[in-house]
Length: 460
Image (cartoon, rainbow, N blue to C red; front, side):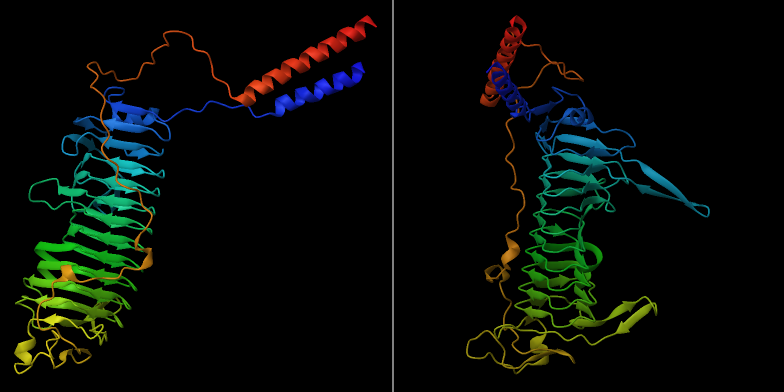
């Protein structure tokens, strides 16, 4: 009997050891700069996944010749995007070609973790500067002012990111601000201001209500470009350009200013271009520049007040083999549901045309060029804001929601460069889970039984 009892006690002890014991995990915390740490890098170094770093209004200097790397899932939120200023000084690499020295800059700030937030900050990149780069997925970059040169800006390589309400300012009053480059898929880029927006190898991105001088897609498929305002007060090449890009949707965009071509489509087919306005272009060569682009659908677009435009379409493309322009004959579709486009020079070519039964459509098709004809040209300029558009089902992409600015704690009058932990006022009783308690009780019971068994064995 004692042997059996000892065996049972041993089994109970093994069971107790095998029971899961809860281990306390560090809880996400809020770090305030400069209250807890005087520098951004010190705060980043002491943060863990899930932490929030709040930065009070003030001017902060980043490390010299270095990239600030965010490799943890954290949120960095400034108190005010105008007055929370962080100056970044990225390192540069030097290389020589013959007797000429060339410089390339590393990133000024790099986000390599997922689910990071960068919000309410003024980020000043030392001229000529490097990029702010987001490599992780589901990044939220919102309500920031980014001061840099036109050759740098934001680069988004992750997916399911939200880039919203950022302003790219120039380092000097007369200098254009930075650009936004978008790679990856399922990103939303909305309500930003930049010198230009560039999408490369992007799919299922939603780009809406941005202001820039130029917007272009390269090797990109199934993107939505809606409600953007393209204005160039200097001489720009193209308002919206699609190069090797198919099956995209362009809706309700406005293009005007000193631009050579309002729209450019090279080697791009099966795109839907609806309810856009190309107007008031100065020194323009043509409203549209085609090159080996077919079966694109144009409807409810406005082309007017482009005084220098002699032809709505120019049809050729650049050939790297011949180092020249190659003439082409692109053929596209110019109406949908018996509604075409508005052409301001229509009556100059068809002075005797008449409206068809108050339909808003002229009775004579408009021959744009020898390969393209609008069968249902519009009588009047279409108000694109009233046009109902049908977005594809994937338009509601899964991206982070914009956070509300948190309430900052009362200011610490005596900030210190490092956070000194405060010892507890009195000892605290540790908390254990019920599994831990059961495990301890079973262990005590097993030890008591084994000791009694040994005592009984010794006396016998």
